[in-house]
Image (cartoon, rainbow, N blue to C red; front, side):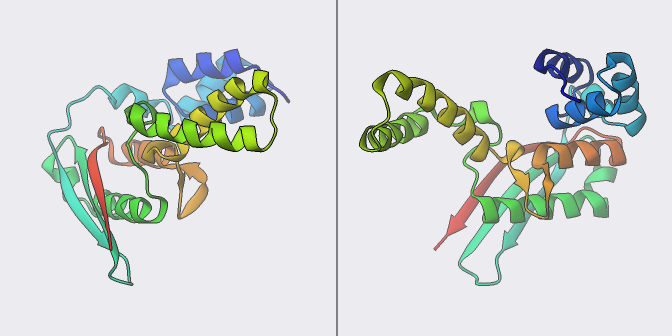
Length: 195
């Protein structure tokens, strides 16, 4: 069943669940908003939104060095309590995220965090490529807008497909762990080093 984008957005705003989870829930419930909302709550996906405003004053800094010893990363992952910061599942999540950074080379945590100068440079390259491909001048701006949106998602950690399970995004992985561990979890910062 096809569901409207407006319904998906409305359900996302109400629950804080991912767009994909909202779309799937609406499809599974034949477009019935109330049933889809309840289904997300039963699966615990709506709980993550309730915790997102809570303070994250604890956490860990984890490193990952690839087997070739030529690339590595550091990540600061925050949570609410020292108890969760020492939890094996939390440390495993931080390690997985450090590996994600090495594998997928994000430049920011969220799409809106990507430096505008980076996008301006990319747009110049894309525009030149589109002109060389013979794309109509009146379509280029629309194509560039779509490429920018896609690029911002591709280069932001939270929107990337998780390397160990491409069916979910990093954002969905973190929400799953928020539900399992019962605390807010946030990526504070990361850096990738490469020879």
